[in-house]
Length: 236
Figure (cartoon, rainbow, N blue to C red):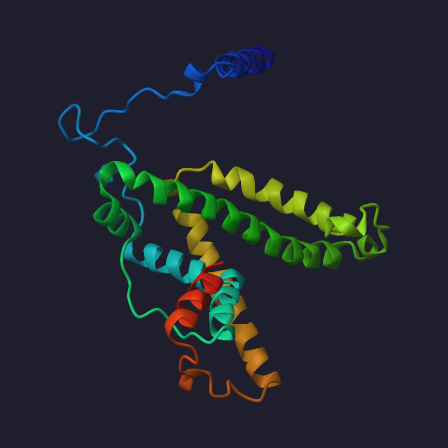
């Protein structure tokens, strides 16, 4: 065991040393599993080989259900409705739109913008995870509510929320290191738990609000330049 840990530590030290120069961050080119050498593709862009096709149609359906039926998606939709919009009239793949508009090389700019957006989206997701984790912690240890706040109010977060964030992050990070084709079991569990919880929450909210009102009959209340501005506000 000690030998194994020493070898791992030495490998990690060597890897950190290699990152001290710009050349250390350059990854070796991956060849395609089926396309000719020199083709603009790699293992991440190739068609998934049969050996890694562990997801079924039910798994994929469950993944998107658990992704869309969430607090983050609710706040996105409610924000769009709040500025006078309805739902999107068109649906198209982002890579298709980027490459058809910018070409192969210039499409990297919108991809970079998308990357930055994903960073913000991950931060928002973790922010919502704080409050969910706080409810879990307070259910197990009610005395955590008596924890004094040691963080200045201007920071925008309390000591309790910071503890909840680190607990949430510690659980989330190992899952991010698992390849998607090995996460089928996780999303099966997630879709069952998420769908059940969300449906129960929606029913409770509708009962408290005496119905859903006229939300399904709403139309856009803005047009022209105001509508375009509202589109950007809704995205943000």
